Length: 308
Length: 306
Image (cartoon, rainbow over all chains, first blue to last red; front, top):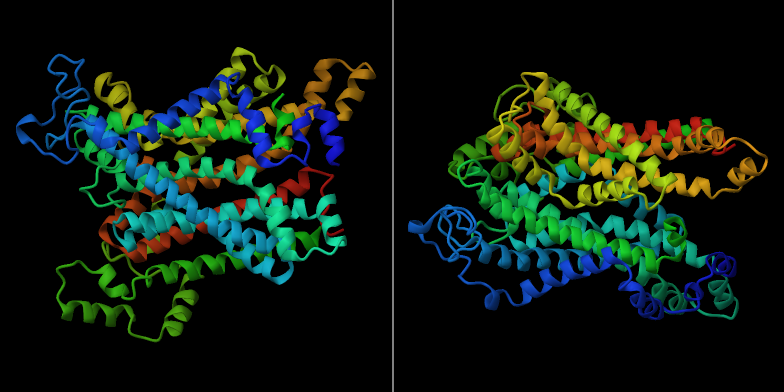
């Protein structure tokens, strides 16, 4: 099967024997030829840099209120000034500074949410896929239950009960998103378990611990990383949705969702308050989706064929 | 095949039980459902009498038994805000949500399937790039934000379309368009990749080599075969649209279940919240079941359990 596939695509790096890092290093040589991947990487790096260097990049404290300077429009409109390039909100806070600080909230939630969901999902999916039987039935029963629910309704439901805090938002996404990781992991584990090299490892006497850690987990990195990119983007998106209803982080925290919520009130009199955090979410999400598409194409040899 | 249908049906019933258990446990997550549902200013005596009235002081298993037997006949108690039976209110709002979701699905299908087909038959063409853009932006734009921007533009600035309500036929255009975008993107991607996949199949090569006209091959062999993945994605999408319409309904003041749900969340009217959550889950689970069944009927290659 493996040799067959490699022969079909004529790409030597697709050989199953290569490790994940070999593939990534090989693929990164082609990164510069893939325009949309470069755009994705660029957008992602901008967000990461903005999050790390927020205090250095922002002209104002994102929490500084100045009611005399409230609802100043962006610099390029007639009444605007370059003192506040993207204008100010209803409390006179600088929107540019708040958008930049918002990257911290979004990335924190995205990163820790994915870490938690991915961790739980990886463990559950590996157990279900490798051991099968009743354990599999129980785990996948729970997974299918959560995946068949209308996601947004239930996330809003839980958030309303738990109350607003950063930890709660991370916990909500970390738990409700774990089933997606579990399902993908299980599918991959089932596929890998049937492969020739696992069979030969078993026949040469390897125990399950060794098979899982030496043979299965390294092969999961590719699909896991791809899914993590997409899910991180989804979490940033859902955080904004919760924030819009006032169910995400506390109102004092400059998050994109909270900014959208306050911007909605002044939609007609000061539309820029809602415009810029929305654009920030869009470009962050766009960057991660482009990056995810690229990762999927280069790390998953089976999907490569479909792209051509 | 009957065995497959029966197992699938049984699975759906189990899922339903799971949904009820989940919805029951969720309002008890903080330990005290009475405090959760009462306003912060309520006095201890008020909370106590509310707890008594709702039966929250009984043993949990008794409460669940009671909740379960009522819920399966659609009784979720009275809405705390409106003092009328919660399920009645949900059903009242059902048509508006169904209308919105159906129009959104129609938009998505009308745009996405042609784009996906063109993209699949001519990868790399301008139409294919357009399809890719639709997919990408459908995934990336927060749709409630887009709703605000469109209201600002088409309702406030230009005055072409109404910004809220459901009074005229024009009212449905903006909310349905915004709601359809993510689904549109998914259907474009699926149609395109299905066409590419099927065009690479052996039987298409055979059809070409035996001299069939390309038109016949495209219509009969390719289109016939992409129906199967399309049916499944359209079935699932409809459930997704029904469950995902709440923000759009709220922003456009669309009088559907979704806006009622978000309002009920704001009022801490949890009997109503539970009723809507269960109702939408039942609809979604049923749609998934129907999709799976039609899948087996359409595709003669799939024969489970025979």
